[in-house]
Image (cartoon, rainbow, N blue to C red; front, side, top):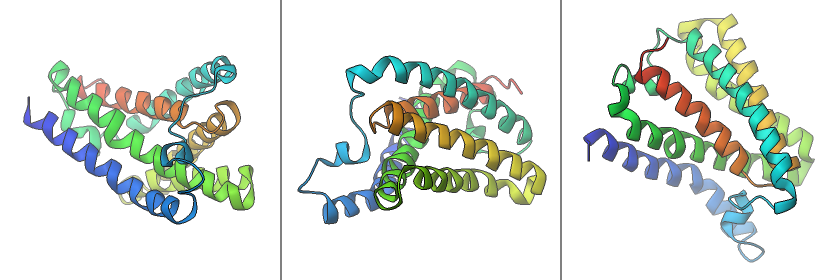
Length: 204
């Protein structure tokens, strides 16, 4: 087992724990006696009657996210990012890249943004304000980190498109998958796999 793979596994475990800590504490205080933690954050199966509708929506949003990923990767192609460690490594980086894409970034972020923030805010203010808020925060966090090197215009483009995808993922989870975060996890992971492959084979 390569050092990179081991590091990605350890890093993924730490990320999942870190991003789940506040939701777990909140659940322990407010909902422990009502439902399990996994159901509370949306780590649950998609109900049978919703599977076909969810699959169609997942495909459409996944294609949109891949387009956004391509635009983002192009805008930041000369900047070091999380996938830069896979640059030019080819197929040898496949397993570490998959661990990174599925468990190191997409799962922790889905737990925090769509599993925790969206659901908890929706309980207080309703679905639409909650989805707007979580998507704005998601977009800002993914764009502002590049402000110093990209400038205002490119940063705003990244924030806008990333936020729109976050809104779409919140929509499919809550309106098409009965609150499950599995659709957004799949879409998010697919986008990160795409970004990793671009780096692995130096496609841009």
